[in-house]
Amino acid sequence: MNKLIVASIPRSGSTWVHKAICGLPPSSFTSKNPFHKKLEGWSIYKTHRTFEHWKNKINPEDKVIFIFGDITHSIISTKKKRYEKNHFKNCGYTGPIKNKNIYEEDFLNYELIFDSWVNCNLSNLLILRYETFSPSTLYNFVPFPFSLPPRVSRTDYTNVKKSNMIKIQNTYKSLIKKSMSLNV
Image (cartoon, rainbow, N blue to C red; front, side):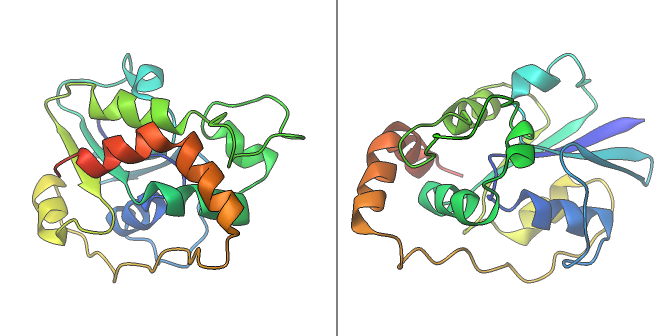
C-alpha cells in the first residue's frame, strides 16, 4: 500500500489538508502525530517530523505534501494553542518545556523541519504555501478525489506584544527569509 504523507511545521494547515484528503469533517477530532488512515488503497499520514525521520519509510511510489505558511503565525499559534508537552513530541522533542520560550528559541526545530522537506529531493513532493496555494494544484497531486473546505483564517497576532514580535523575528529570521523566498 502506497503512502501519502502530509508534512508541515506545526500550525501550518496540515490538519486542514489532511482532514480534507481523508474525507473527515473540518471540526472532527484527529489523534496526535502521526495520524494515519487507509483510503483508496493509500495509507495517509500527517506528521511534523523531519524528512530524516521518514526517509527510510518512503518508497518511490509514495507521495508527500509539505505545507508551510506564515512563520510568525505558526509560532504564535503554537504558543497560544499548542504549548503543551504532548504536542512537542509531534516534532520529535521530548525534553522539558518548563522555562522554554518558543519566541526566543527554536527548540522544536521548525527550521530543521522546513529545511529537511524543502531540500529532500523527492520526486513525488508537492510544496504548498498555506496562504496562497491553488486547490487545483492539490487536487491534481492527490491520486483520488476529495473536497477541500474553505481555507481557515489564521491566528490573529495583532494582540502580541511588540517585544515578543521582535523576539520571534530575531529567533526565526533565517526561517522567515527562507519561507518568503521559496517560490511555490
